[in-house]
Image (cartoon, rainbow, N blue to C red):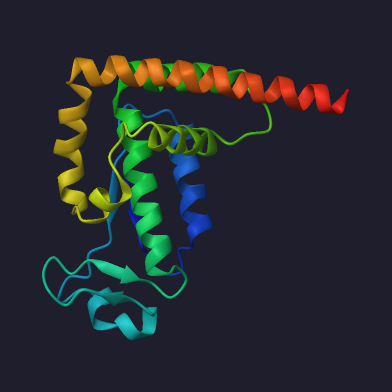
Length: 178
């Protein structure tokens, strides 16, 4: 699992960590928000660590000095989305199989592009809905989606459509170069 919002973590360093984690091809992938619990070093030295957090339980981080709250919420959404796609085994396998034939692209970027594609189809949880969730609720949400056969089937079909669009874009790029 990855913890989002650690001190000195940036938008790009978190994406690098997410890339590293999915490149390991784990069976499951979990993203958790940093909680600044009373009595912890992060709580006691929050100003030293440049951490801003909600004073109400569960004391979720708002920003960390190297990541704005907007970046944090974007990463929370991307982390949730990549993890959800990773939990849907047939789709994860499709993404990894397709990725194996690509060069010059990070796996995390392929996941993110697919999430962006899904947003255009109004098929996927929204950034707004995920920003309101606590990461403790991510796991039951993954279970709900991955056990919904209609969702899994539609997600696989959307990935095939996404692949087709990428192939068309690549062909257009090749024609421009030629």
